[in-house]
Image 1 (cartoon, rainbow, N blue to C red):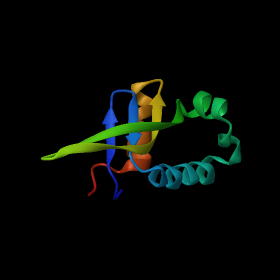
Image 2 (cartoon, rainbow, N blue to C red; image 1 turned 60 degrees about the horizontal axis):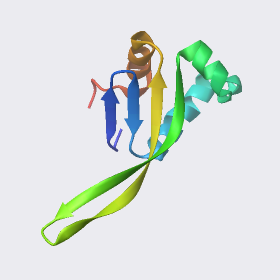
Image 3 (cartoon, helix red, strand yellow; image 1 turned 180 degrees about the vertical axis):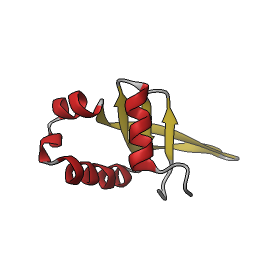
Image 4 (cartoon, helix red, strand yellow; image 1 turned 180 degrees about the horizontal axis):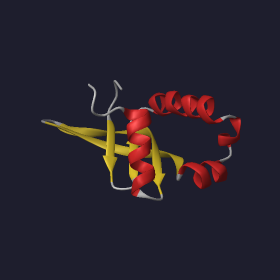
Length: 95
């Protein structure tokens, strides 16, 4: 993955929605269009996603400024579901 991805306990933050869109397309290809229904995604794969806007403060010598970053947060219901997702779709070990 080329963009920044933050991994926390039961949460993965995609700082670029296009990275999530690529993974979501792979999920739909792997498991079928039925995974487009969020309740089924939650029930069968153990996670759901949400769009999020994060205000980022950039400090500079003359003050600074804020900007809004569009993000996608993937919330996991179990640690095993998050581990499976990371191994299958993030490949964090191979950079």
